[in-house]
Figure 1: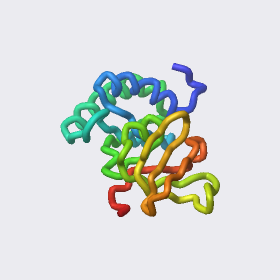
Figure 2 (figure 1 turned 30 degrees about the horizontal axis):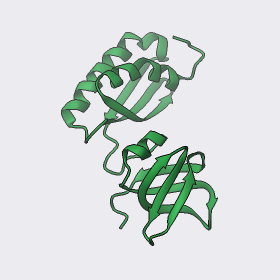
Figure 3 (figure 1 turned 90 degrees about the vertical axis):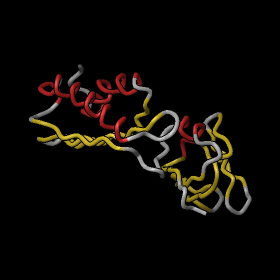
Length: 158
């Protein structure tokens, strides 16, 4: 394991194959690498929602992996929290938008598109690096993926 890589990248390199082999999706990882490293993983199922039993099982597998590599990864120790991203899960990759086509979302852009930086609507499509949103007012907006600052499912929008 390359000790010059950031801690988050080393952890990801170690746990990602186990998550994928379990047919799960790592939605987000947060790592605070102090003396005791704090790791938060948000995991979902590739289809449908994840259950508490599935979270417990993958959490146990990840802890075994981290324990095996604890001395090379962490200054002293670590704490880990594994949970579901929730119903308003973040959308991080273009594939996330494709997966949730037809769902309600909130998208915040890095710069104005038209006159706005915040958009509420339904994902019409996600192709060729662009998102098409069907807005509440009936208008369509095209957002280049690289301009997305933050996005999440927003099932409470309308």
